[in-house]
Structure formats: structure tokens, C-alpha cells
Length: 449
Ligand code: ADP
Image (cartoon, rainbow, N blue to C red; front, side, top):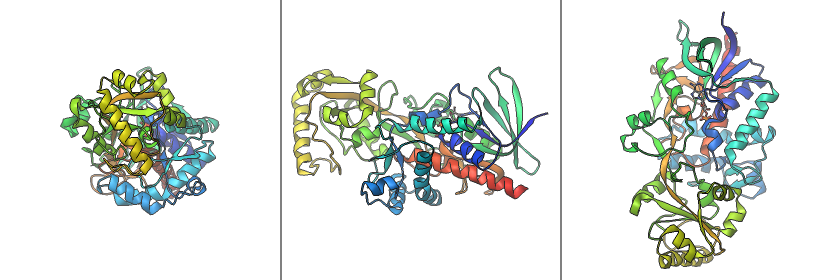
């Protein structure tokens, strides 16, 4: 006879763990299934920050950001094909998500800038480290403290439904290859995207054939396929984002490195874009350059501001030079061109106006040696499409109605980010909609009583 729980949560990334902690705190018994050996999913790989407007942190720093501006930036960044209701929900509640993470012990006191944002609103860990591991650690510790049942190497292979079409449980394949069933009043799908599934990527976007990926190997879109089988509608599946700065190994160089001051140059040693434009625009610009790659370059003053860069140096992703001549040699670009690029940039930075590409924010003159550079190219980064949800994180069926008892949050869903996700909005999405999914599942269970 099968065990019975209030909710089975599929996936232990940021969205699933947020839903699990929320439901537990509302008095429910939950089981979290994670197919990999570790929790964290793609969330662990997030390097920038968590976007939110009108937070205490912003107020303290005197940043005049508003929820309305956050909404406008997100819609514009998403080419205005985002679901406006979902974006309203995201942008209104993101500040509560930041406060909630802080209440669970994250210290997100640094506010930085990410691409496509009018004001700094990417909330980052106080020590300048990457956001993803901090979000996962904070939520995982909260789950452990609450003794929440998290089962790794446990893969959801089927979602079960009752006679009225409501979800009724999940079939699980455990580490020994055996399958078993968990009966559940609700199912929260938080299984992430499909950025590591070449077959599915190419099915929806043929031009991505052969692209590298920045995603963890578990991002295979299982959740989308499971939901489709029980009648869920899918939206925006062809909207797939390439990140412009992936090292050849697939390692991501965070957008915040450019936000903190780094620039991009091509194989001729020349800049070719405002580095702070959205990911799709910068990726396309890179693909127009000789060899279809670029270098992201920073100096010592920039390095001292952000820990991330030391991480890339340690990982061996960089070439370096004690001056620009040495750097040019290491990059195999013409030294004269590179020096001219940096001279122009320093002059423009001093004048407060990027004469070439209109970059709105030039935090560093980039005149302090030594220098480091990483060769980068676009790689598949985020799948914007997925399961259709409404603002309550209810999964919508192909008949346009919510599937009773079925909720979804995070990268497995579509509609929040439209045609392009802004840096810092994934973390905002997973925590905000993860919590909403938990709250809605709670309301569903209470209403059914
Ligand atoms: P999000 O950012 O939306 O939380 P993540 O990629 O961080 O997404 O997390 C999703 C998690 O779901 C990953 O850890 C992934 O391994 C897990 N997952 C994917 N498919 C399944 C499945 N069929 N059963 C259990 N876990 C799954």
C-alpha cells in the first residue's frame, strides 16, 4: 500500500526547495524528489544575483528603483511576449522573496547591476560570491532543519491522475532501479528546463544544433514531458536563450563581471557592442565577429571588487598580462588595436560617455594592470518556455482550465520571461513562484477538506 503525503515536489532546485519549505511551514507533509545525486540543479550554477525592486537594500543604497520600472524592464527584455500577469506577480513579490531568503539566513546585502535593468537591482551575497550556491545552501539548510524528506537519486517517471483529471500522485524510480508510487493530494512540478537536452532543443529551435550548454546535466526537460502527458499546455517552447559569455568548456562568465566593469573585444582587439545590452543582443553581436567569439577583459581594480573573477582565474579560464602588450600576445590579437581600444575606453569613462557604443555605466577606467581575459562564445543557457501556469502557479491544461492539484514553478514553466530572460530574473522567478506554488497547494488542500 502506497504512502500518502500532502505534496510531492518534483525537483530540488531553487523552485522545489522554496515550495517545500513554504508547504512545511504551512503544516504539510511533503516529499521532495531529486533525480540527481545532489540537490541544486541549475540554480547552483547561477552566478549573478536575484532581481527585486523597492527592497530595504535598495532603499539603504539610495537606489530610486520601482516595481513598475522592474516590470517595464522585464517586459522589454522579454520582447513583450511575456505573460504580463505573471510579470506583475513576479515584480511585485520579488522583494518578499529577497526578504524571505534573508530571514532564512542568506545575507543579500550587495546590490549590483545586470543587463537590461535601468537601476541596480541584482541582490547578491554580502561577500561578493555567486548567488546560486547561497540560495541552494540557504534553502537546503532550512529544509534539513525542518527534517523535510528529500530523496536524491529518485526520479519522477509518471504523474498519476484520478478519475476527475486531478493529480493523485507520482510514480518514482529509485536509485536501485525499482519503481514505487506515492499518493499525494497535490503535485508541485519544479523539475527545471531542457537546456541540456540537445534533441529537445533542436526540435524547437533547429539553429541550436551543436551549441554548447551552460546547464547541469539533469536539465533534460523531464518535467515538461511529464506534464504534457497529463494534459498540460506548453507555451513559448521555441524561446531559448544563449548566454553570450560561456568559456569553451561551458563554464559561464557571469554577466555581473561586465556589470562591474569588464569589456568585450573581438579577435581584432576592438570593442563591438555596449556590453550591458540584453543577452540575446550581445550573443548575436558576438556571432557577427570574426571567428564568432569574443574576449571578456578586466583589470586588477575590477578584480578587487568581485570575488567571482578570482574564481575564474583559479579555474584556469583566463590568460593574463602584466600590461596590455603582454595581454595582447596571450590573446593573439594586435597589440596596437587593443591599446587603442583601452585608451578610448579610459577617455570615455573619464568623460562619462561611451562615444562608441553608448554603454550607460562604465564603473572602471580599466587602467590598472595586470589584466585578465577569457575567450567566450554564446551557449544555450535558459529555456524560457515550458508548462503554462497562471499567477497562482496552477498548471493550465490544453482545455484552458487549471488541472486540479497540479502546480508548477521555475524553469519548467513558460511565460514569465517571454523571449529573453534578464540576468537576475531566474532567481527572482524560482523563489517567488516556488513560494506561490506552495501557498496555492496549501489553499487547494484546505479547500478540499
Ligand atoms: P529551478 O531553477 O526551476 O528550480 P533547477 O534546474 O535548479 O530548476 O532544479 C530542477 C531540479 O529538478 C534539478 O535538480 C533536476 O535534477 C531535477 N529533476 C529534473 N527532472 C526530474 C525528475 N524527473 N525527477 C526528479 N527530479 C528531477
